[in-house]
Image (tube, rainbow, N blue to C red; front, side, top):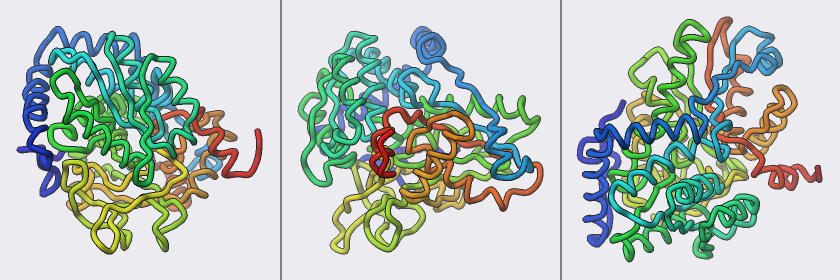
Length: 400
């Protein structure tokens, strides 16, 4: 696993934040160090993961899909993060950060959200622990994720519309950072992905590493060995870094992240950062140095994806390091490929996946002919697709 010495993964990461936020970042870093060693708080976290979230989540062998894609030559497994309470991996991090906030004596949580899953998870954790909660969300994402907006309201959170920039995840992070600058005394910013200034990439990775730990034990039991490849979609990168973390030291396990190819790389309507589109280069975004989509003038570029959760201009710094070091490979799936994969999984396994996860499924569909006999692959099914039904129907031109 890449080390985060002084907030860096290789040359990526760091703490590029306003001076007004530095005390809060130092406080979070120091508090997390103590939180990890406090037996009472760790026991409470483990209790909630089991009794409230539903962990460990299942590792499911997709026999029907394996037969359809490879005639049974390969074994395809799904790590079922969609079975978590609130429907995605996000609750694992949100609960951890809510407990951390309580440990620090904070009374209010704020968060950004794109697909709405992290917003719902943070609102859920805040309700459980009796905390105030404000969620920042771009108006484009609010329109395509209306069910999750309503869920956040039901959970007692206030959803604050963001109408600046591209009106998506990048802009929601901007507004959340501005709020935190003003309210650090009583507020903790529960970052939803493994990005932002140190210590957040480390904090989110550590909370989400439970995915990889569970998966490693489960696949050894199910297949009798480690997988040949582990695949996950990558927006900011929390679900991917969570499952990758348990296999980074295993050089025989290929790690593959799948980005949002949108309408393709010929134009600018995509969210590809690590597949080396002509619009990406290292830069600073939201407090960290990583690969960032930029326009010709070096300004942060807007993005496009049918999936709100992958619609982000930057990527977590640990992913940038894994890419540059060659330890992980990154590719992309287009909107059309992701929606096609969404439909195929529904029809073959009776599982409705999130559009984010569908990008990872699209990759394994394309790779299936290349899999050798006896291959074992794991796809992280990061969330369920209830939230995406309207988006898929609109994309397909059908009303279900």
